[in-house]
Image (cartoon, rainbow, N blue to C red; front, side, top):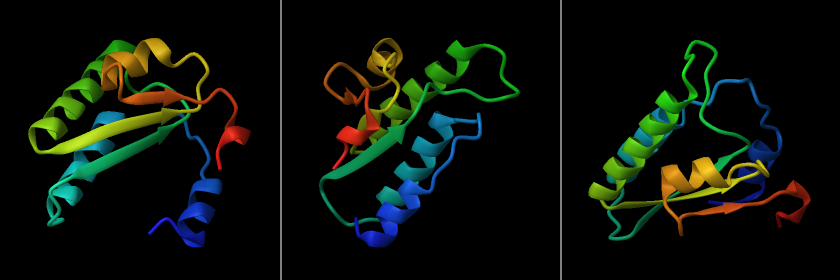
Length: 111
């Protein structure tokens, strides 16, 4: 549930320069497959593009994330990304699709 504990965990998150978004999407998709609901939504909240300290080509991780989103869709999971990066439009649009993301340029606008 989206309760005080979940909100506190989100508020306490800190970036560590390692965003393997494709891996996270695959893991969450597998967890959602265990749920017995017809409609499944995976909400990805991020502060930046897929990146990792040991991957030199940023496009590699973006393509991997896009592939993970496509795989999730084939398994009945709809993904939606909320990005806090004001320069996210080009890459989140490519990864999630035109109507499956929202860029919030100011985190204070979150409820």
